[in-house]
Image (cartoon, rainbow, N blue to C red):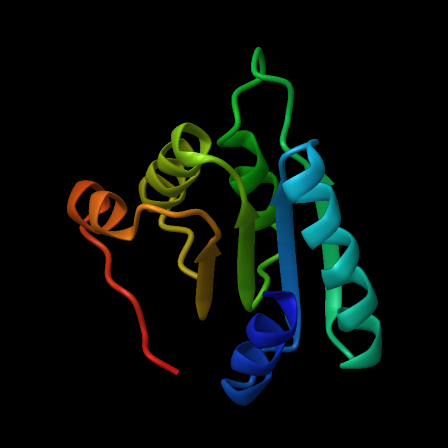
Length: 119
């Protein structure tokens, strides 16, 4: 999954990326794969686990916005993904690429009013 994402982003001129991920097997494995790929493909990258729920998962997007990355990657589950996307829209955080990895695209598309870009 991360190999395809890295190729997609590189083809679109992305050189910097910020990531948030869940602290569970899905997020940890994908974040580790991204870390290895970003080094090999010369991406400047930062990542962090999703904040404690008391702080709110959308805080990850707000923190990364200040770094002005070309791409934002969220390896999260649906409730957090909706919050992260909504907060990003409210902050006008609009990097070249915004990637949210989870199943359920029609629900996400319909609720958030966003689409996808075909490779």
